[in-house]
Length: 293
Image (cartoon, rainbow, N blue to C red; front, side, top):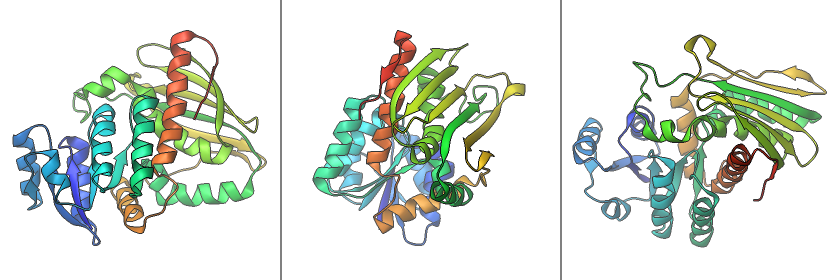
């Protein structure tokens, strides 16, 4: 399958481009980005083509991987789907439910394949744990903490403007929610409170009565940085571990596009987006908000 890549930033270089070039079932055709010089540099590393326009890339590939800010991704991915190109998307799939819905409708109308790169969901250790946990059942609550500190000197994300603008709810929130939803069920209501800087505290009630407590930040003090997900149920209080091998996870996501079937398709990406949007509304209003899919 001939893949093109949209994006030239850090994550595009170290994960998407490297992963596409390494996958035995992929021909990495080339790259398009808004900055011509960066596009040419990244394409040259992998002996691929530097496309001058998005339309040029779409005309020459079977599938497109995206590594751009979510608002830009939602618009470009609709164009790719309408051109009949399969999609490998980043999370979140967009920043508002209208854009997400338009993308879902484009994928459904054209029948293209889709996979959303929720990194943890494609981790071999997490995937195995989640499969076993779902078969056990009896889960009643989760406590999901992603307390990061990413804007300091030396961080590859220090200059990421969309992360500065949108904060932890939109950057790391999807990772946590992508584990809670398949285990505890769809969300029906949320209530959230803002903390210092971009810190988010929220409680999600799932349709079966289970609850999820979220604590998210990209601006935590470095000494306080921690990522920990704990699930509570008949099996006890369980904190799953994962390999942390993003490159291997990416290979599995690419394979999901090649195979044409996976749980982390654009519809699931939209479910996560709708929940994020409800949390954002609650943070603004200070009231409980229903989750509408």
